Length: 262
Image (cartoon, rainbow, N blue to C red):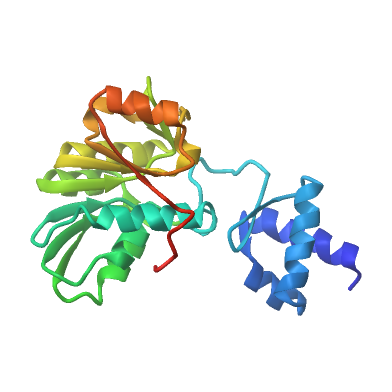
């Protein structure tokens, strides 16, 4: 296969799946991962796709408002992992917590110690990740399954959440705007996350730098519902100051000097 043909096929695959890993492309085309990385670099330069950690994502608009978990898994990975590690520090033995269906919450689940905890979640991936930790009680909301995010939503999931009160909720969101609050692109996820906030004594919002100043379609809640924001060092200093001025606790993790351990 000619180089130009391979690169055209790469673009087609990325657009078809919305995101593809370097390792997958290497196997598909029987070339080294280094060759694939060079292809992706050229294709990104030509605005055919966008490179991300471990792969590439499509630049074409999705036919759904919800981003597939396969695409979310390779966007800002380092930042999300370090934010998750910091979030775990705020969980105490015996806590009852909620984890949403975000990639960062999944990294949190991977990092949680196997100690007495109760975790309520609408995420299949989070529930599976915690299934081997014998000291952790996992409660799944059930509901209507969204295949792209492997999460449960809908009236059953909402009713299930309303049955409980928890110590802490850990959620992410598509946008965190200092005037308009938290927002999501998918209305089903918005309703679930709003319910998660209302169930908790304290709400922790886990967002990387790219979420600041963004206002998406559906509002989750105002900023006064948030107790602490955990983010990375690339977040806008002025936005962080505005959050602190509103009485919100802010934790900034240093993703440069820290090493990945998840």
